[in-house]
Image 1: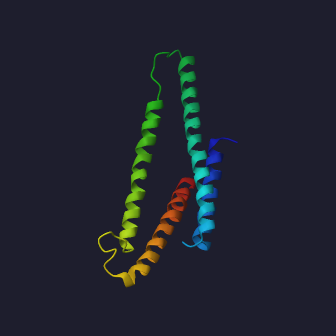
Image 2 (image 1 turned 45 degrees about the horizontal axis):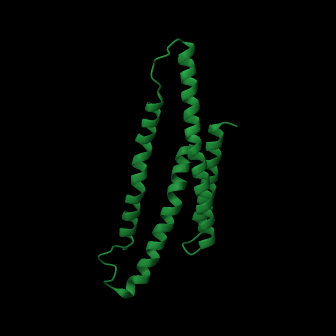
Image 3 (image 1 turned 45 degrees about the vertical axis):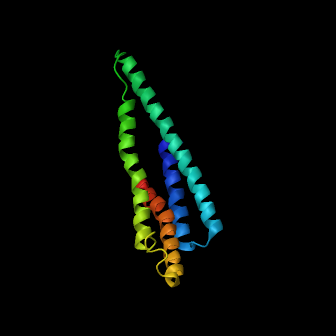
Length: 149
């Protein structure tokens, strides 16, 4: 089956699930959101653990090739692969909390003005719930489409 096909399958499932939640879900659809979170987290954890397996297979193949060529003491390229992975993945870990803070601020949900006008509190709560809903749905959809492409 192979790693590439597995990843493509996971991305396709993420695209379908995110699209379904985007078009048929809402912030009040708790069972649908819970199902999405469980399925998405299981698929993401399964595919990200597969990355380490694929990485170890590549390193083992490269080491075997080096041994066949008689280069016994040459360092492995595993550090370069892991460094490149960290270079791409770590900034993305920091990007989504920034996007969440920006979206909530845009929706009017800030600590400074939270209790200024109690009449508008329900409107702010609704906008904040929709902002969080879109933050839950759009990043997996967007990044799955990019990775699948």
